[in-house]
Amino acid sequence: MGMNIKTYIRLRNAAGHLEEAALGYGKGCCELEMQARLYGGEFGLTWRGVDGEAVEVIHFGEWNRERGPDFLNARVRIDGVERRGDIELDPEDADWERHGHAQDSRYDSVVLHVFSRASRKRFFTRTSQNRAVVQVLLPAEMAKKQRIAASTSDTSISPEAAQGLIRAGAHFRLARKREAWLRAESLHGRDEALFQALSTSLGYKNNKIPFLLVAQRTGLAQAKCADGEARLFGIAGFLAARPFDEGDTAVRDYLRTLWNDWWKVRDKEERLVLPAEAWNFAGVRPQNHPHRRLAALAAIARDFRKFSTALSTDDTTVLAETLENAVHPFFSNHATLHSKKPMPECALVGAQRTADIVANILAPTLPVERGLALLDTLHPGSPISRAAKAADWLGLDPAARRKALGSALGQQGLLQVFEDFYPVLPDVAGVR
Image (tube, rainbow, N blue to C red; front, top):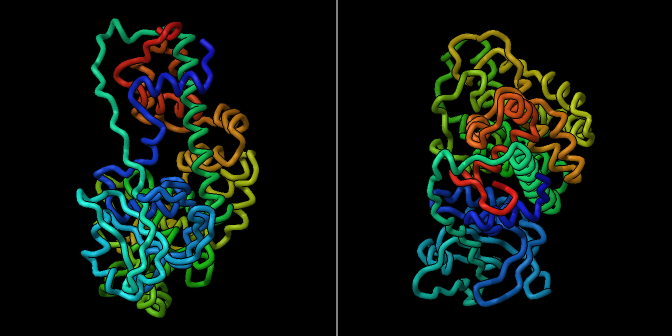
């Protein structure tokens, strides 16, 4: 069946999803993730203050490298009037008082106090000079309706309906990603937004947030500097003091090079260093270790103009060659900073990760129809398990299954359908 995106959204909402859910701050989301998502624009840029003020963020400013508010020199518009100042982000409104901000003059320039939970009793944010600060409660994640698994006989739809659902799902998914891209670009500029997006992609599913935070807190300008690689590894928390007599000569020499740069800026950057618990190393293959992926990000930053140019066209061959030819004098044949011995030489960014970057970074920078056309020509590697499960659940015949899983458009659509409707297919006239 032919299905447009409006029909897909109507079916999605009927299944228990509301558009606000994408902006939600879930209970499992830690404060670090909240900071990364807010700074990246995921929560949107316009809100209503707790007292009804119209609040719009023009720019979040910069990460604070000293004690004090989270973001400095931000630009916000409150009830149509532009104001400059700082932004403090807390899990709960009462944290302002708990953390002593009300008596700390470093917080006197705060113009916006953002939090994800409100106390039962109304709490007012005030500075040490007794000035009221505008409060913003971030959009709460909407509850989803409980789904009841349908029997096998109830989960079959026609091949035409399945194909229409998959394509509409891909359209919806890409449109959402493009909206997120445009927000990030408006906040940070094209190159900075690309740098953050590339970093997130290199983090894979288990380390997307820490990689995003490293990119945000370092910034492209500093990552491109001569000491940029040391800053990336230092802010990631990977340069904790340890003996230099581990590993072979190449390991010791490389660590010494990083430390010679990092110690000069370590005190200034200390507040931004990620804690060890932010990282997930479980089940990571050596060639995909976060140390290697961070080295790939450093290589990208050093020659960012080349990558930015490659990302400005929908010619995926140029981008693939640029990414897959990235090399590193140490990590091309080492897995971690503490490798005991070299490994066989391996690409910093392989073909499958390149396909993921094209699908999740390049495609959203294009108008949606061009992005969909690009996804339709892109042939990713092994299908994601959820996409394969969705194809089986839809009852696709072998040929249709191969076609759907063989293109990035089909995989993206299947992923969205799985997230939105599994285990119950949409029940509207003309779909079943």
